[in-house]
Image 1 (cartoon, helix red, strand yellow):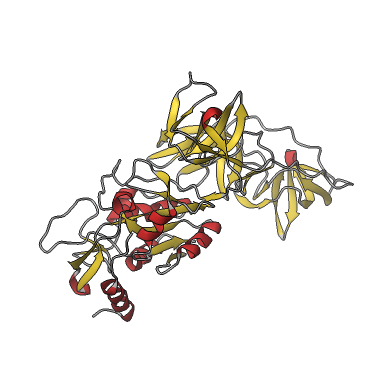
Image 2 (tube, helix red, strand yellow):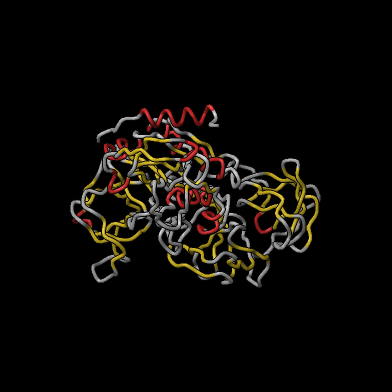
Length: 456
């Protein structure tokens, strides 16, 4: 027997009728670098060795989740010189100048790999007051190999109790532990000078299909082509060329084809990308791939797409209870099976990884934007083939009965919006990966069902 909620869900679908229808500036990394309203915070030097523990992992050319440069395989190790936090998530700065995630779900870290560290400050007197000069780790013992207790924010005053080999036992916020003296200084007698303000992000719009190159000039390699009419953030200029970001890449484009834009703003959440066709072939797995991207963004799991899809609850033909049939193949059966998993079952499965996964079906697009403002990407049920008009068809869904459903359904992640009204999506089935959708197309396809799942 169906639950009241399930009956309501089925009734709502049956009664429906067809509805027509970014990279930060290239600047020296300072202690607080603002970019798109997010912060890059540099911790006191974290030295040691980091080793990749998952099958493959991106490295980055700068402290930005959009600055992907190369993939490294499991077992690869790097020397670490620092640790930073970018948009609330941690990165290690590597000795070779690159960056890698510090998420323990993907890497392991061991302190003190023989990398040089700053000279220790003079030993303070007992119970003296000192100020942190960077976001500083408090550890269980006097060395980088000891477990971190907490992070002391830059500019905080701490009570120093004793010292040992350049490390100091400090008390802060009710906690006591050890911190490197290289990042502690005597309490200043006057207020520190304010941090310099950074210029606001500017935008330009392409006037033609425009090549983004790896350097300033046409002799450099083409990274991607930006379609005409696309608005892109600008982070620097050189000799009539602009450093711009598009579709997860940052490079240089000729200013001859970039037009200044005023009164424009955008909000994009840069999440890890997973393709449902490669390396795992899951032609019907857009729901699972989309949810996994949001869970990985929230650092809730490091499982592979294959494992994530295999562990989903399965049913013979009822998507309200689990994934109907299999996500790994297109199944031809009589009567036809609607191969999908609907929001209630998807939410229930997602809670195994993050208790904050929530079914927000029924949300208006304005409510979806509010979640974006809070930094929460959402799994949304829309349509295939460039957001074509919804096509309705009745399917036998087993114990759920005969259900009238959008036959050309597709699922992806809503990751942003802009002041022009367009929506930014991360699509597991598209070669574009991340792209903008016009307001009319997205809202018409989303409003057919108004189905969505958020990971807060």
